[in-house]
Length: 295
Length: 269
Image (cartoon, rainbow over all chains, first blue to last red; front, side):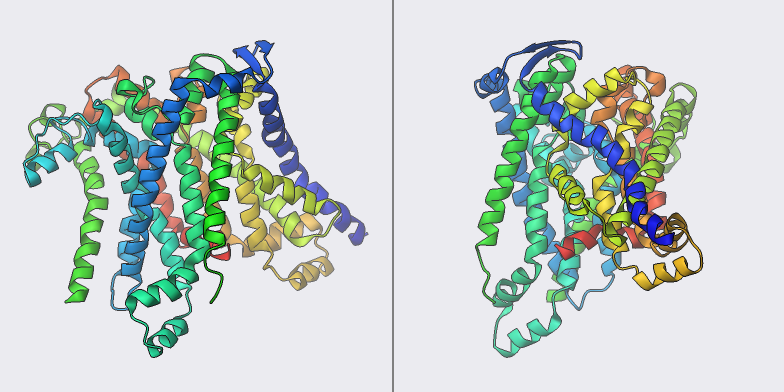
């Protein structure tokens, strides 16, 4: 008897998860592919157009603006955030540093605010005249306190990148620090005996040691950055900022699908985004994977 | 000397992290008229509780907060139950189709969330759940990441323990509930915090689904307040501060588990 229940048990245990997964995970994925071949006006009116959505998307200047903005944000965030995160982790990992847990908590604390509430906070921090940023720049460097970060096209993306930097640097640092602490200390001793300097140790012991985490964080940050929505939407509103300077891919998807009612076009934008993210991840894995296998 | 430089760098960055948060706290107690007069911190005797009062008396803030607690609470409990039970099945049993189930779920994890927005809206629309809390909770039940998190951690529960419970007369569900879940407490803690933060901060989907202001969750409600009560900066900051508190409290209760859970998957990579 116990054997029989043990045979059916795993199926029963998985059933609730698999059932809800089929309805709210698998079905929407398949349905999304189908939807992307239709022009729709809300959930009721649909008209089959084949690949037209994708063809139209390729020539849609607003979509390319969104791609350009999103790529700028992703590049800016990854290139600034990750070296800074790794640098901080290296500093914190030094044997002679005390209060490591306190620093780690402080660096992580912006993350506790969460993306949405941070955006609400930065809406005021970035405000001209009474915002903290302008006040600080004015007090420290004598810059004018009237800079309109969110209504000057060229300043919109730098502002978003800055908020993301504040929000995620500490988060990524937690990963790097954990990885650094897992590197075998004997490797450093051996390297020192072999006469390797700091730089050589970093290059030949540290980097190979944290490689899996490094790749993980790079790929995940890129994927996350390409799905930028909340920050831009909350700070800039439906209009996506001056000259669409804050229009991101997901924001464009939202505008078309849920303000314009074309769920089909939204699905096509979604799949195009998925394809771009997948290709980027593959390229990153290829670059980092074939690099240094020798130890 | 070198150590001093390191400390200075660390402190500098710590300040950059903390100053905006300190400014948030200060602004929550700042009178609206003082925003333009004192951009940083007003003198102590000018601090006021007026922002909090107006949040609760003139704005439906309490309503937003209750809505958020209801949606996040229900979602976390459902996710916890489904994911842990599923993770247990995948960790501790061999059965036909196990590989296929795991493969399909891993594959769907690669697909970015925005792809699902349009079909999910259509689905929720046909289920008649637009503008309802169920429309947020029901599609939020599935947490594939959570299921793998539980599977990973439950793999390390020794089979002998399960066998002993079986001999003692436990059925399979009792084994899960009375043996495996209690020893998985750290991962349960980590999962609850991650899942709570995810739902509490969820914005895009509620923004699509919710229409009536008495159903708004905190992120949607606070964002909407900016439009309605323009220039009530103080109340906005007070609301943001209160909205962040539950996460902070939960984090302090569960932080050990959280850091472990966060980095577990990664270091295994």
